[in-house]
Length: 349
Image 1 (tube, one colour):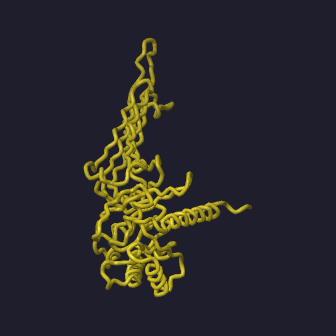
Image 2 (cartoon, rainbow, N blue to C red):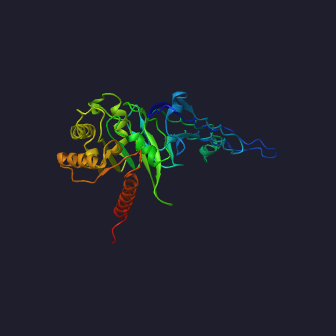
Image 3 (cartoon, helix red, strand yellow):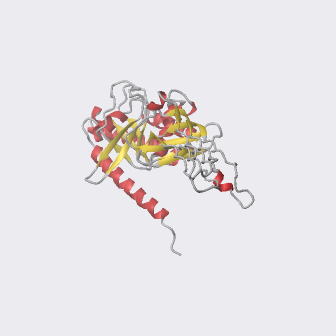
């Protein structure tokens, strides 16, 4: 399925039903008073988070959603039936913005979460509300109010714990296929991956995390070259980045250290916070070099970069180093979760 991460839809909530102007017409009640009921509420429109969806492709086929109006009130103080609410399913990670005002309406991040995007109109008042000692037969009613109508801009940012970052052919897709059940397209030429792939990595019985294979970036991605802008934004939601570097490039002229700096520059150009996000250096394709040579080359690149963070040498084909890497990631994510929970706890009075 083609990955679609932006869509525009129009939503229109239902109008409220009108109030009724009615009078009692009962036998043996010669001076029946007003008994007009209120109108029903118009249907509202909600977005509903659905973990089973991963694209906004459905909105390519349907772009308008309209909720039913409320029914008008009737005699005997009967309130009209409210219009049914509409629930539009969207993938987790969907950001909703009112296109005309630019106001962010919300962010759908949990399965089953409901986000109101267009409120239904209120039902009008029947003439029973306007009865008084000086006006015993009011004919005044209030019509139902119009429902909200909006043009929405939906933007999907992939929700993942770990994001794989690297130039084309850095081995990102091969790694995610080796450590999870995801099966992205893999080939020996660049730009194989054209949309993000998500995989669940299970480290233990009750331990798992989501990893995202972000399509390879090129020089100038932060300024819109290639598909860079579309995919860099998906890294903003991850908690940890794995900066993938090919330790055995096909072109011997390629400098892994220079490519690392270039990609780091693209990150800073798009969002300075991305550079500050926890990031580990991962050298891939260790199986293409003799063990000692692969280790020596990786150590040399680390020294050239002055890298002081964690780094790993792995082979997704032979699974060398991948299990240790996944275990360390799980431990790091658990520590991040504990720190976040501690920060969220209120200080004791």
